Amino acid sequence: MDKIILSVLLCIASFCTYAQSNARFSFDLATRMVYNHNLDNVGSMTPLGFDYHNVISGQSGDIGTLIMQLYATKIDNLSPHPGFFSDENDIEIVTRIFNFNYTGLGRDLPNIKVGHLELPYGSEYRIDTNGTLKQYNHGVNLGPKADWGLSFNKQYEGYEYEFALTTGGGQDFTNQNNSFVFTGYLGVPSHQNFQYGVSLNKSKINLLERQSIAVDIAYYYQLWGMLIELQSGERQRQHYSQAFLELNRTNPSNTLELYTQIRYQESKKVTRQDFIIGTDYAITPRISVSAQFTRLLKQHNSQFMAQFRWRF
Amino acid sequence: MRFFIFIIALMLSPYVWAEAYCGLRDPVAMISKLYPNYQSYRSIVRTIDARTRIKVSEQLPGMPLHFGELGRHTLYVIEAKGMTQGFVHVRSEQTRWGLVEIAWAIDLEMKIIDFQFQRCRHSDRKHLETPISRSVFQGKSLNGLMLLYDFNSNRPSTAYYEQVKHQGDLSDSVLKCAMKTLLVTQIVWQKELDSINQSLVNEVP
Image (cartoon, rainbow over all chains, first blue to last red; front, side, top):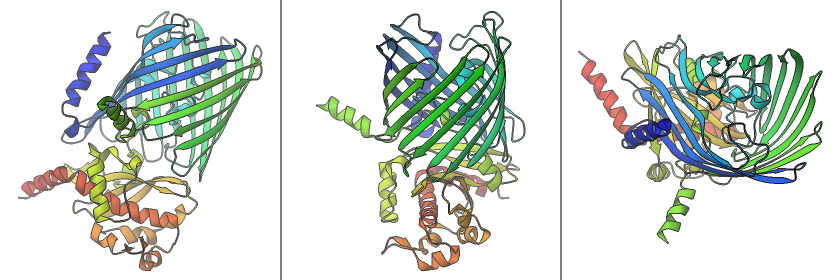
């Protein structure tokens, strides 16, 4: 609760001088319907929160960027549900991104990010999937998508990197069972039409040990985009390999996107093959609707999700 | 009734970024290319609103800002050796092959120094990245750029196509983007530009 009060006070203080400050602020409301075929269950998730972004500047340059995203998230009859909810009907304060990235060390030295940060790994590193139905592989690869800790990061003309060490708690600030997550990303800048990078992960979260290496490639041409992620690693000393492919197409105004994803994972114990197809349409700059169908071929299950999102 | 009007106004108001703000990234690679010797940059975030849109449509008729261009935007003040070197502002323009984002380097006199495509998936991109094409924009003020545009037919002049050595929707978009960038920067960041220019005058012995 303290972090909510502190965040709100900071937002209010900044908002008082909004017009002449570097702050960006938005409320964010979404409602998501999830249908699970095997369970024949319809559940929902409704997050309502705020998204705050502020670049702190001094006379000689930027000092850092503060991002705060807190959401009161209610789930109804949602099964399965994320682990930080106690059961399928619950309401929790969910921290998405909540960090300060100190950029004041100059052009050559790294930036230092502290707080709840998105783990730098794989295709997800380059693409904002915050609050969207479309996701990449963080859940499958790493467990948490964002975690409490710190990172060193920097963008240069020809490459960018981020290396993070976090507590493994996900939503939980405290470190339990000596958990930790190390993730790192090194690649060419995200604005290029042909992008590639390599990622590393080594973690122990509540005694579950993981380590992996991934190579990701993205290529954009005209209205088409293609992303590939190849990964090899160990989970509890069991080797696995994974391939991921996405093909997407947008319209010229970038308000409509259609995408399909294929994920193939192979190991001694489990093999998964997922097929995903979805769309996202921004009706106005503030309102978007999206839908996604997922077929889990090996689990013989399907899932359909639809979402309405309003930022105001 | 007022409540419903308020709700509708909120829903239609475009001043909010459609995606989460954590997706915002500074154009560091662009700044490095445009100002190879820069030491630091300072962000100034201001609102491009409906009043800006009206002023742009008055001064650049037939070239309105689309609603996606409104909202909070950043002007980067580039510093080196304790002196302001110029500015970088990134604007987007729609083409047949998607949105093009261009980072413009602007000098203290509000003239174009150079530009870099931050995002461009257009197949004609290479034609606009040649030294000859870039030189058409370099050193031009808003008035200089406006001479290359035929406002009666609402398209670039023949002279522009001849100079840039390419005729297509991307070359049209780059010229429009250049004009809008200089005009919007002067409208929205006028106070800050005046302050910077004043401080430079005061520094001269």
